[in-house]
Image (cartoon, rainbow over all chains, first blue to last red; front, side, top):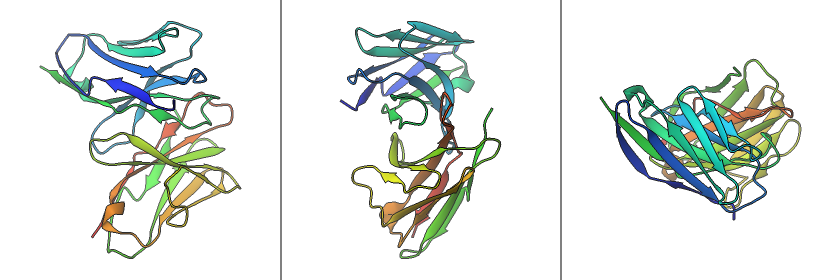
Length: 113
Length: 115
C-alpha cells in the first residue's frame, strides 16, 4: 500500500515532442504528489506538485494530471528539449512536507535533438 | 528558493573507518530533515527522519547503530556511517522541510566510496 508505481522505466522523445510519465498509488491517505527532476550526480529538484483537490496543474511546460478515482497521476512535458534529459521521479506523501515521501522507481528521459 | 547544502560532496575512505556527512539548511530553519540513500540507476530510499532535538526515526531494515543521525540544531543534521564497508558505498542525499512548508528541499548529495 505504500508503493508508488512509475512507468515507463525509460523514454526517448524527439525535440519538441510531448513526454508523458505515469504513476499510480494505492494508499488513499496520500495527499501530496510532487514530481522531481534529477541530473546525474545531483540531488533531486522539485518540478511541480499537486494536491488531490485539483485535477490538473500547469507550470510553464510542465503539467500534472491527477485522477483521484483511478489513483493515478502523470507528468506531461510539452515542447521537450534536450536540456530536459534527466531522471524523473514521482512521489507521494500524506500529512504535508514534514512527512516522508514515497518515491516511484524513476524514468530516464532522453530528448533527442 | 530554499537552499540545502551537503558536505562533503564526495568522500573516499578505507573499510572500517567512520565517515560524517553534514546537511545544512542555508536560509531557513528546518524542523525536519530526512536522509536518503540512492544506488546507481535506482530510486531514493528513505533511511531515517529526524526532528530537531529528538531521536531519529529509522526505516525498517536500516541499522541505527551503523547510521548515526544527529539533528542538533534547526539548520544542521549529520549522518555518520560507522565502520563503513564497501557495501555502504552509495549516494547519500538529505532533504529538509519546515513545519508549515509545502515541500521538502533536497541537498546536492554526497557520494561515498568505501575501499
